[in-house]
Image 1 (spheres, one colour):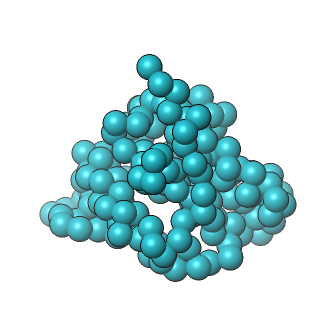
Image 2 (cartoon, helix red, strand yellow):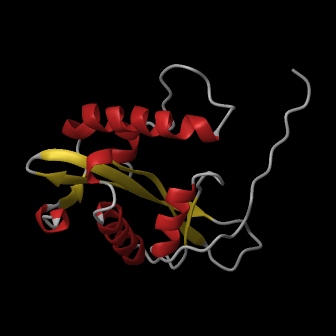
Length: 159
């Protein structure tokens, strides 16, 4: 089996990538629907990717093989609460790799670049959110060094 990571280019996303990034976003939403009964039907846009690409506090990366986008992710500088020891932290999101390239280290390549970007911005802590029942994603993040930290809970009351 070919080591696809050798032929993978990780680069900063541009406006020209927006059509494919929007496709990835809808595929991500579809993958997350089974974990989240609160999501509306139809197209959803968690992020304004165009603004994120232009935002100096956000780094949107894409993974590319043979001029074809196969994955993406972003890192964003965020402020902490006044009572926390860090002034800021890095938030990771929109981690997506097309199904045919999963399990080949692409998300790890993206994470390495995003961590480096955050380190260069002076950040020493990274957080992300993942659905509790998304065991595949949790395993991948744990393999990359993330540890479970908090749990968000919900309850449906009424109709």
